[in-house]
Length: 119
Image (cartoon, rainbow, N blue to C red; front, top):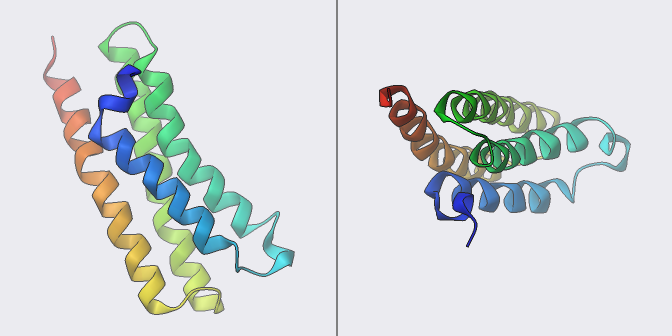
């Protein structure tokens, strides 16, 4: 098992990427290179920056990649909100994605705080 696979933040981020992909399959084809691509890339960025950070030397570098991951997670909050207002997602689906996003954010933030505590 790779070091990142042990992290709850990564496990949940990976599940979130899969759910974002499932949710965006039904979005209009003309959004394929717009909102669909953007939200998929942002969700992917959350998970992949945790992976990349785990491969870095030292806590400062790891923390920097966690910051990028956290910013990407913020981005994934707005796009489903917009997609709901555009009629691509129902309120229930948007709420479900927001709940999943929160489930990623909590352990990710905790991990960031833990990295701040390291000397």
